[in-house]
Amino acid sequence: KSREWKAACQSFNVTTDLLPQLPHLNEQTSCQHFFIFGKGHLPSFHCKDWFYTPLPILRNSLRLAYSHDSLISQRPLRYDKYNLTFEQMRPNLVSIPYPSSLHWSHDVWRPSENTTATTTGGNTTPEFVIPWQTVPNPQRPTLMSYVGRFDHGDTEVRGRIKRQCQRYNNPKVCSFPTAGSGKTKRTAVISSTQILVKQEAIFCLEPEGDTPWRKSLSDSITFGCIPVLFSERTDDVAPWHWGHWKQQGRVFIDRDEYIKGKIDLHQLLSSIPDKLLQLMRLTIHHFARQFQYSLQEDAPVDGIHVTLEGLKNKMLDMKQKGLCAPKS
Image 1 (cartoon, one colour):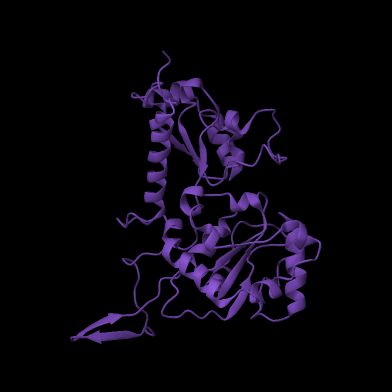
Image 2 (cartoon, rainbow, N blue to C red):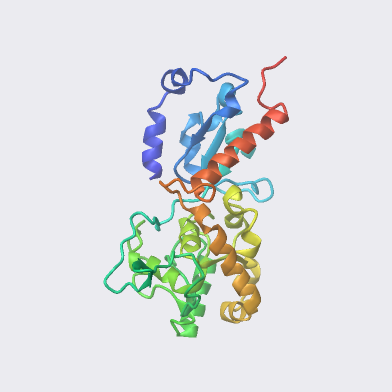
């Protein structure tokens, strides 16, 4: 919660509480240190001197959060009220994926009574499908799904999604919440039954929320559902984890054209050629593990490994550019 981060950061003194814990910190090693802010970057405004507007000794340190904003110079957000550039506010910030609601592990998986099995040489092996896999069951009964509310975030896009899905009047075309979606008490908890619809859908609609960055994106990818985005800022998130493959693993909708009524989601998504659709699903099949933070030693594919590799490469790049060295 933002208020919890505010209380924690305001009670934290960088000079007396943090710097004494970093005996190896100096100008030359600053970029070998990193800080993680376990939320989107905007509430880090309260975490001054280390994450937001850091002390000079910490300026070259790396920062991770669930969002960043490389587009702020082109289209400023209303959230940051101070006349500072993004790099001045939060230098060397890179976003990493929100932890998804799906935590897959071969170790904790247990076959159910209805699990099928194969027998080879007298040994019985249960058959199961990792949620983001495309085989052996590539068919999904629902074309698209939306999980979330309609009364906050990008309400223009969300409202049009609601109206289009109501018009389709077919849960096999569009699955969306039909109860409790009005202006009722907000909650951060989404029922598991809502999230599981992502495993049944080919496409998952991901409009902006209170900010452009959604945890739901991680849920969609780990459930093997092709995300449909309406925001460049949403698309810009987690560059280390999907920057190199997202072009083949998501659909990007022109927001302005959509809210003008020029795009029908059913017509657009159902018209995608099967060959392209299979490429998108296969891409997610290969890379979705990068959106999982695993407790297992499953490098080089999980989110922890990708994060550490990204930090190492960024640190080496900064050193090569002379950005992390003592002044002569």
